[in-house]
Image (cartoon, rainbow, N blue to C red; front, side, top):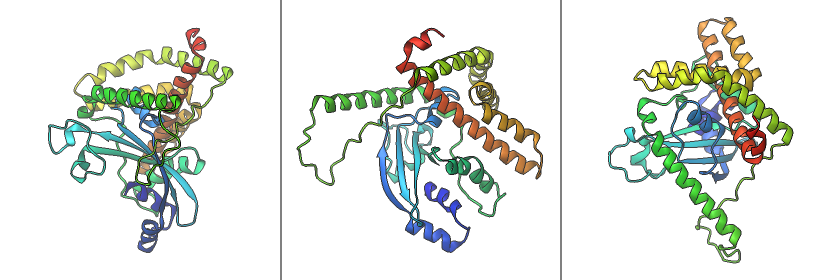
Length: 311
């Protein structure tokens, strides 16, 4: 449903077009990637203190005009929204009775300029009624609620179990435990091929290490303030401190996106509501950039540990 709400923005907002989108949009393929953390999920967890998702899917669809687009879907579990208080395991995503406890973050993959524009500009403006294509799409909030913050430890434990299972599966594949000649029925689940990790060059690793070290040093006081604020009972104060940390990190790590936020703040053309929509879009782009940079730093640190030891 949420994916189709994104797709409706591609066409004129008429009832016939909506019916066309909902009947002619087809799923081409999907890949379960529970052991791969998306950049946005990494940013929400490591910077904003949000629980980790318990699953991730990448869906590739075919639009009515034949073009293809990939969506990233992160699945979160919120115990406070469950209909019962005695869950012993995460609910099945197909269980309609448990749907209220499952939070879904759906958005187009950012590896295309059109998708970045849609996420950062088109959808925010449409949601606020500043476009001819109005949307009722309700995105998952970027900042965690107090109840979600209390579930971070449990989500980390679940994430560790997922990583352990993925590693065990990979070892089995490498040892030849799975018979490649065995006949697998069409209904049997298949193990997706692991996505190769992008390779970071020595030069990029050095640049990332220096930039990240400088950023951590500069933003250390703000990060400390955020921890203190988020330990209090005031969610508003915690959100403001988290935003301040994002701005501080973005100043060095995502200069273009950081400057875009400043430009929107100083651009009052079109009135306050349009300005606020532009600021929200610019902040989301900045948050995405910081999250993606954080992920590349993690990869670089694994591939070039000596570089980071020197910084």
